[in-house]
Image (cartoon, rainbow, N blue to C red; front, side, top):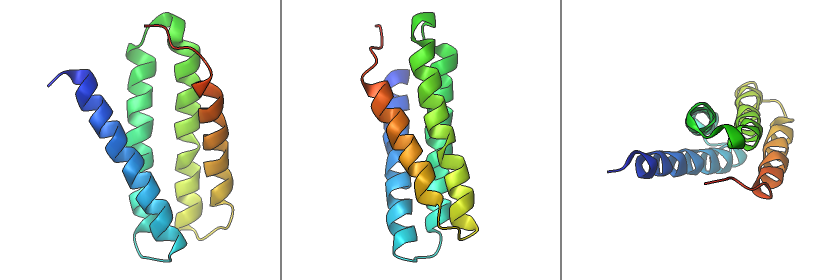
Amino acid sequence: MNIYKLLSVVYYVGMAFVFTGVLMHMSDLPYGAWCFGLGALIMFGIRLYNLLMGKPENKRVHSILVYSAFMLLPGTWAMLTHRGYWIIFILLTAILDSYASFRRIKK
């Protein structure tokens, strides 16, 4: 298996963990924040790898995506401490991801 396919599969697994963690946390199920945090760490790791190993002309887009994934980590902390503002960090992630989606990544 090619490294890019493996990273894509791992990234999608991380996204699934984040989504499942949000649903579990909203349903007051135990370990929802931990599931969310695991997915956030996976996403942060993959995006950091892309920043470090990507082409220099894509550094700006990849750095925006790293900041976006980093916003999920304080969201995890807010979930674990039962704060109500965890959704703000997810909103910041969504805004940064939306902005980065309109940026062109050069092949």
